[in-house]
Length: 97
Image 1 (cartoon, helix red, strand yellow):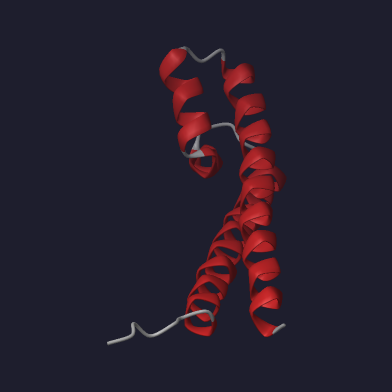
Image 2 (cartoon, helix red, strand yellow):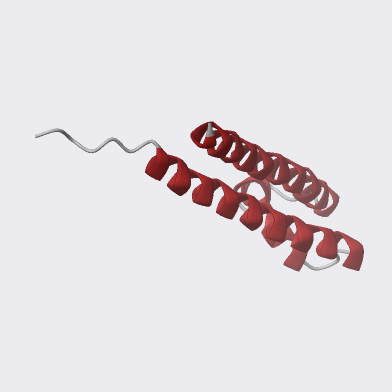
């Protein structure tokens, strides 16, 4: 029962990280579109959307929003990693000799 709880926590952490990433990509895409960026700007917006907070002309609210999303992303990753470690320890079966 405890292993299933950490499995659910692992899935929730990975899902939260994916959702935060998609929301950040939407904001970074909006910033890239407003700047009229080319392929490289759009690629950077998809690969690391949190970097858009440091571009010129970004409002303080947008920058603060991306900063909060960055913190939320790392918290979600940490929850997923910790849950994975606990789940693997709970389901470990020692090899037989």
